[in-house]
Picture (cartoon, helix red, strand yellow):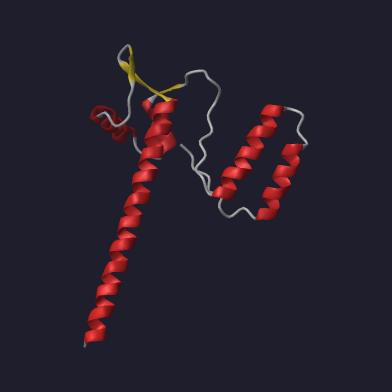
Length: 134
């Protein structure tokens, strides 16, 4: 799954995107562009996927999208971290399940980063207090 970082897009460019979106005759395109702009401004995560058709991916495709080895993807499948279905002897992963796994993985990373930040802050505060006592 590719991740695009959009938090460095200047507000004037987002204004231009919104102006362009309002000129669109297709209601769907207008809604997508305005929602994208709003999410970027809010700093929200955005997942883009196709229509309502179920998309099935091979473990190799999943590995490519997640940027990891196929062997590691098979371990995730075996542990039940990513749901799959069997097609004959092969395994197939629903795109929706992959998106849910990636969201959960990114959320866990964020929580861990916040815990480390708090821990480092607490250590720095304790050291500062000790330094004040000496």
